[in-house]
Image (tube, rainbow over all chains, first blue to last red; front, side, top):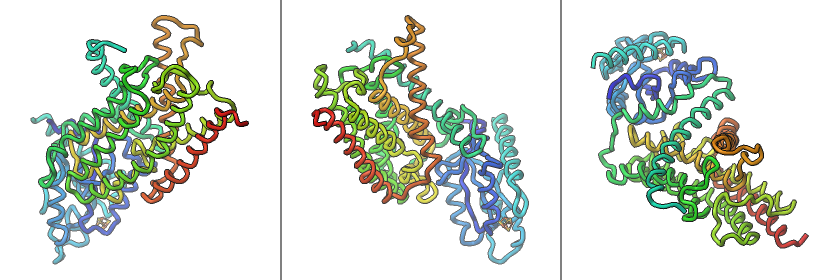
Amino acid sequence: MSLKDLNRSLWVFHVNSGSCNGCDIEIVASLTPRYDIERFGMKLVGTPRHADVLLVTGPVTRDMEKKLKRVFEQTPDPKVVMVIGNCGSTGGVFYESYNLAGPVDQVIPVDVYVTGCPPRPEAIIEGVVKAWTKIEKQGEKK
Amino acid sequence: MIDALQAIVLIPIIAIVGIFIALLFKGIDRILAARMQARIGPPLSQPFIDVKKLFMKENIVPKNAVKWIFGMMPVVALTASIAVLFYIPLFGFKPLLDGYGDAILVIYLFAIPSLAMVLGGFASSSRYATIGAQREMVTMLSYEFPLAISIIAIAWLVSSTTACSPAFSLGAISIWALVGPLGILGLILLFLVMLFVMPGEVGAIPFDSPEAETEIGGGVLTEYSGRNLGLFYISASVKTIAFAAFIVALFFPGNISNTLFLTGIGAILADALFFLVKIFIIVFIGSTFIRVAIARFRITQVVKVYWGYASFMALFGLLLIAIDLMGVV
Ligand code: SF4
């Protein structure tokens, strides 16, 4: 089993850990005919068991901390975690809020950060390409 | 009838070719669906990449699952889907197990993958999967009725007009020549019913409420991952082409080589190609087109559509054929 085989067939599960829904809309926008991420074999799936990539949006509120960890553990290996949006990357507008358990990398290990508030679909697709390169490099090391 | 040795050699070949064609057709189906939605769509080889990836992934068995059922059901589903291929004429050849089974057996074999999914869903102990399994059962109960009417109508037609055999073997006779104009109308209705049953049978979109990933997170397949999910994935693809081949065998048997005056290897190739084209047309209408054109039905609507409209159409078709055969008009 090598990570390289994930390439070109990334099934994506979307976790909302307390986002304002801006990033979520942009993720859905990247499925539309204009951006069409299915070109790269990506597909939104309904359960973490089917997923290869977790797209995490939002800054991880206290309530979502345990649930995010559980979703991460439910995802079969090998897997990639992508953070979408400033909130998840740094805390964004909620930086140092009393109600945050995150940003995301305080809770689960993150592979790729996509910044923007919200990031454009182009940025999300670029993030996926970065995830590919990362996967390929890890595959070579093994 | 064939001897055991031949069967042992041919069975793996048919299985592998069947899986290959099934995944290829799935790729074409995804591209066509994407084009109809003004998208570009994935490459043709996408299903192969997906399957390869699924077999590489970790295979999680939930802690509370009934492990042996959970692990066995994907294999059962795939085996049953492939077993159907042995009873259906493929590529213009006679079925491999010709004479050992008929259309009635094929209906039962088609039910097994769905039953396997139901059992696997219940065994996985997830609530989402349980809801999905219940929905899958309801869907099955709904489409089996119009399907059974259609098959039995055709079987009755064949057995009462030809002297060949009491049991109805697939693909031996062209049913269109057996009836008059009214009967042809009836057969067309039955054909439409079969096309309409197809998306329900293979779990494609208007009837995919058992797997609705937007409401119940993957339904029956919620807890399946890795290799088990891959087996279900292949099983669904194989079932699609098997059902298309079944419709072709019932309604459009017959080869093209005689019409083109071909012989030898040319004839075999032409027949195989002709068969693929026929299957492609059925898959396109019965699965791809309906899938893109209609949104998902609620489970109550599924029952209504199948028990109501489809069954009514099938019964009407049966009636027309009966009138035609008895020579009332
Ligand atoms: S990054 Fe911006 S758009 Fe995205 S969830 Fe946070 S506040 Fe909303």
